[in-house]
Structures are given as structure tokens and as C-alpha cells.
Length: 419
Image 1 (cartoon, one colour):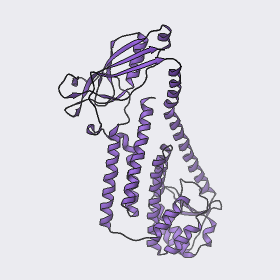
Image 2 (image 1 turned 120 degrees about the vertical axis):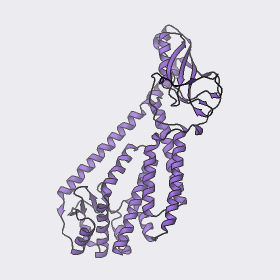
Image 3 (image 1 turned 60 degrees about the vertical axis):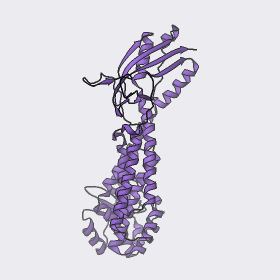
Image 4 (image 1 turned 45 degrees about the vertical axis):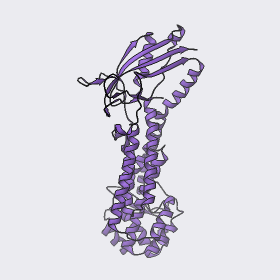
């Protein structure tokens, strides 16, 4: 298993903790729709930014160790072969996930192309004077089009936004129809389609992670609830609007990357929000939002600092002038191994039946990535190289001096044994 695979696994666990903390905090301190939308956007941003959070040494536990930081034994034989197969599968995980991201991005591109075809195939719609007045008031750049293939209104576009309408819209009462049109126009006014594209891009990057996908879903539900509330404020037709939502509940959606009057999974939350619609205290919402942000940010920092992700391989020389300590220096605690890679037993060394110990020396800087690797006790050229290549991939909790992370010189012993 390579460091990138381990970092990916740890990062995924961190995201689960962040989203779970955010969900629990949100349930304990409910927010109005506008604040809730901002909060869940901040949660998604935290999930994306976790690898950028710096480590806090005080949060990383370390135990005193001896002069030899680690002894590692590698044996050759059938068992090692099975481990190699499992390691190959694990090492291929990042490539598999990257392939999934590419597929998802292609799916988004295909969706955008389908929406363009929908625009071209639609028929220009002429609505009543009240609907036109509402359009001029909220989103004069928007255009109306009829299309028989859509089951509910579909809104998309940035420079030339368009609202594609189903023919069934004409069967609604005037109040219900104007409420639905108001909903779509508000999306255009708010430029929500741009936000939706960003959200779907994040969903594509994290297609494998249910917690992040759920957090993006919460962003989208919060946005729909906020727009619903503005519709009721403008039209004063809450009951008619709720009936319109129910009418379109079972209609098929054209594309998730288009804004529509509703998604099936959102119906219950939106109807419940409209049923209990009230305006709470702005001050109360403010302090609740502040508490939620602090709690979630603290969870993000704590999980990221527990094991910082994103360290690349860096086997170059240590910067000139940096002090390097050893266990003999006062107040120094040696680094501890948090990830190690088994060296490959070269076939040539196996054929020559070479076995024994390779002792290595290196410097572990505050980043935890070993530098200045050198062979202190040689065994065989092939085994020496195998030991160095393995150690280059190890990761450490850095050593400390008087509680602060410092560069420390350590020794590693790798024992190669034939069965």
C-alpha cells in the first residue's frame, strides 16, 4: 500500500467525521434556510480543504522510543507473494477512483449537451401578462420555452438562461402556476445554476464518498427551501404552491444538472418546511450559526491534525542550516512510525540466498517524510536499494524537542529472511 492510498483512506475517514459532526450539530441547533444554506456550503468547503489544514503537534500523540526507531522483517516465499497481490490491488485504488471521477465528469458534459438540445428543440412560450410582469421584475434575461418531453419545469443557463416548461403547467390554477414560475425565476435571479455546476463537480470528485455526497444534497435542499420561502413571500399563495409541488412530485426529472421545481428526494423536507414556515429571531439564528461553524471547524482541524494528508515523497537533502537532533540531546523524543512499507525482496538476492540486516540512517523533519537516507550497515547492493526504496515511503509523527516538532536523526533496521 502506497502513501497515497493510505492518505486517501485516512482522508475518507476524516470526511465521515466532519460531516457526521456537522449533521449532529445542525440537528441540535436548527437554522433558518438562508443560514443553513451557508452552513452546509461551509461544510462542503471544509471537506475539500482538509488536506490544507496544517498539523498541530500537540494533537499528535507520541511515545518515547529507543535509539532504533523501528526494526522490520521481510520474508520471501508464498505468503509474501499473496501480500504483493493484495498490495497491487490496494495501490490501484487511486487509479480506480480517478477513473470514476473522469466518468462522472463526462456524464456532466453529456448532461450539458442534452440541455442544449432541449433548448433548441423547445417551442417559444407566450404566457399571460402577470407571468410576464413577474419575469421582468425578477429575471428579465430569462426565456420561456415549451417542451413535451419534460415532466416539470427545468431551468439552466448563465448568459442566456432558459426555463423549459411542461404542458401540464397550464392545468394548474393561476395562483399555483404563478408560484411555480416565480420559483424558477428566482433561481435565475440568484444564478443558482452556476452553484449547481460547482456542487455537481464536487459530487463528481467525491463520487465514492457517501458523506460528502450527502452534504452536497443538504446544500441543495437548503437552497430549494430558501427559494420556496421567497416564493411564498412574493405570491402569498402557500397552499397553492404546495399543491403544485405535489402535482409535479412524480414527474420525471430531465437532468440533475438542471434546476427544477423539485427532486423526489427533496419533497418531504420542502413540504415540511413550508408547513411550519415562520420567521425566527435573526440574533438567535446568528449565534446558532456561529456555534455550528465553530464546532464543525474544530472537528475539521482535529481530524486533519490527527494525521496530516497530502505529504508527497521528498527524499532530497535537508535544507542547509537546519538543526538536526538525536536521542542524546536533552528534551528530544524520537519520531514514531505511523506508516511503513514492506521492502520488496529482490529475486536476485533470493537466488543467491542472501539474507540478513540492512541498517539505515535518515533524518525525519517536521513533515514526517524521511530525508538524507543512508546505509549504515550494508548487506547486498540489491537489498540495500530495496530497503532505501521502502524507507522513502515511510511516514512518521515527527520527533519533538521541548514539545515542538524538530528534525531528528534516526536508525532503521530491516531484516531480510528467507523461508
